[in-house]
Length: 168
Image (tube, rainbow, N blue to C red):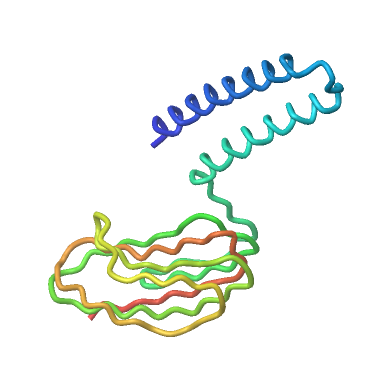
């Protein structure tokens, strides 16, 4: 993953250099009637656009947890936060023909929180996005044994979540 990130950064640096050179050429080739302020504004716009692209591409690699407070137990995860962008996951292994009961209590003051149950290596069995407060439970049949994961993803969210689960 670090190697892929490094390659992405190198490509973005090359793209940024190309954009900067093109912007400078456009400023130098501008009509003689344009004043210096217009040229500088155009250059600033190009630099900001390149920075926005750079941040947008790398934004997927960042995880932010502000005011993160909580605990994890063998069958429970509870956290509250002022700002959360990223993910938390818990894995467990089970045998064939089991039933997972997931209890959730979610408080969302802003942003969104997504909870999903995934059969490793990536088959999603259940997923729900929360944009507002909610509590409840869901029963999920786990017909095949193996490794499963409960994943909580936050996108610019403030609030808390409390998850408990039972396998029967």
